[in-house]
Length: 460
Image 1 (tube, rainbow, N blue to C red):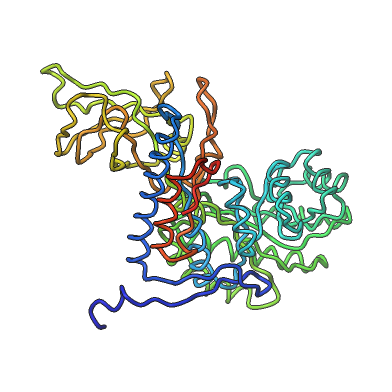
Image 2 (image 1 turned 180 degrees about the vertical axis):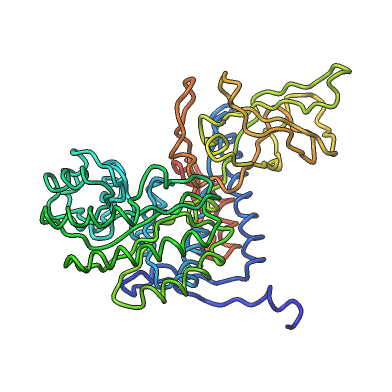
C-alpha cells in the first residue's frame, strides 16, 4: 500500500433510512483523520461553552455539562450497516433517552426498544410509527399494557405464564415474542438470572399462548449488557431455532428473531463475524432479524465535562506517597453510576484552561509533571469515588475542568438527585459529519459574540 494514502482519501457518502430516503450526506474521512478532527471540535465546543458563560456575566459556572457529537452516532450507524446489514437495529432507549439522539436515530431509520410507559411516550412523541417499536419488557404492568393498546404498540415480549394472562386481558391483539434464556458469563451485567425461558419450558408457554388465542410471531434473547463472548450469541441462536420449530408445530407464523443487545464499540466486528454465518445457517430466509443495541450507539458520542470544586493535598511527611484528593461536581450518584454497577474505570483529561477558568491560587505556574489523584463526587457519601490513584500529566487545581470521554451510555439515564445535587445537565450538540470543519470552526467562534447563547445547544 502506498504510504500515507490510507489517511488522505475522502469520499462522499449518503446514509439513507429504511425507505431509501437520504437523510445525511457527508464526506467520509479515514478513521485517523476523523478521530483527530472530532477531538478538536469537542475541545472547541467545550472552550466555547466556558468562554460564553464568562462573557455573559453568568458568574462562576459550577454545573457539569455534556458535549454530544451526533456525527459519531451517524458513523456508528454506518458501521452497523456494514457489519450486520441484515440485522435491523432497535435502539435500547433505556441506555440514553435524550430526545435529540432519539430523533436522529429515527431519521436514520432505526427501530426502538422500549421497556416502560415513559419510554414509549418519549419515542411516540417524536412521530415514530408504533410498528417501529418493540415493548421489550417480559414483565409488564397492567397500566403499561393498556397504554400500549391505546397507542398501537403491539409487538412485545413474554417469558412466563402469568404474563400471558395479563396480555390476554389488556393487549389481546399483541404480536408476541418469546424471550428465551441466554447468558454471557463475561458480560458487564448478566441478564439471564432475571429474564428468559429455557428451551425446555418454551413449549408449554407456546401451548398456553395457543390456548388463549394469542399470536406468537418470534423469539428474542439478550446475552447481557456489554457482551464479550461470541459463543453466547451462537448458542442462543441455535436455541432460538429449536423454539422456532416448536412455534411452527403449533401453527404460529414464526417470522421474527430478536438477537437482543450487548453490542459494544470495541468488538462489533468480532461479534458480527461470528453472527453472520450462524444467522445464515439457522435462519437463511423468511425471518426478519432485529437487535437491541444501546451503548454501541450512544457511549462514544458523549463527553462529560466536570469542574474541580475543591482539592485536599497531603502535606504530612507520612503521606507524601498518597495521591492528593480532588472533589468534582459529578459523581457515582450522578453520571458515574457505572463505576458502581459495572466497575467501569474512567480516566479524565484536563481541559486546556483559559482565563477566567484558572486556579484561584496567585501562583499560576503549574507543575508539569505526573501527579496522582483520587477523584471524588460532590456528595457526602464516601462511596462517591469516581476514580482512585489516577495519573495526570500536570497539576490539577480548583476551578479546572476535567473531560471524560465515552459517557453516553447509562449516565444521564441512571443519575439520581441524592444529597440534593442536580441530575439535569446541559448538553451541547455538535455534528462532525454535517459540514466542512473550517466552517464549523468559525461558526463556533461567532457564537461568542452573539447577544444570547442558544439554550442547551451550541451549533458548531
